[in-house]
Image (cartoon, rainbow, N blue to C red; front, top):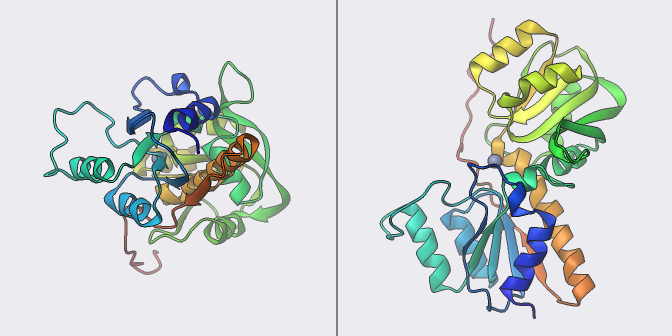
Length: 275
Ligand SMILES: [Zn+2]
């Protein structure tokens, strides 16, 4: 059985922590480097429900995409929700490790998993970094042109179900051949999306003003999914990567992906067709 430190060394090779953004907080949140690991749980969010799932499974390590603490803290008292998570993890000898923006820009990274979930052919990064193929977001081609409405329906069918579902901006009958995809909040990438000349952009958390300006400036179609849903495919991709590493070392790790929807939005009511 591998030690936590050995597993973390392999995870750091997949998603080098030095590739994370300066504002980010990636790496090991809690855990004894010498602890033996035989079950690992992947999830998007380090919330109590996920910690409970790890306890039920008997997992000794949780790997999440989102950090527990993004900024410094002076308390892990169990009177706060984050403190309760820390208490629960330490009490049950469960380690927590985070791969966030270092997983976004990895190869394969979060947007590769999103593109794969929709069966899109990746042609390159949306925002390349100095390393070439790696970078934020991906530019993809569809095997056959389809309407924006059909592309949105594909996203709705292929991504895990959420209360939000899929929102669409732009002409639903416009033809889509090339798309940009970016897991998580994507409206900071509009300049790169416009420069790439794609027909549509699939991402999450699109705000009113950037979205409005984007569709006014160009015929770009916007497909907005729940943040959690755009990043969840990474959990399956990452679990597959760790299973391959485990096989190579003969570790025999049992690797799980949480199916719990931890997107904060729980209900959606359509207000009817707009004018
Ligand atoms: Zn995210």
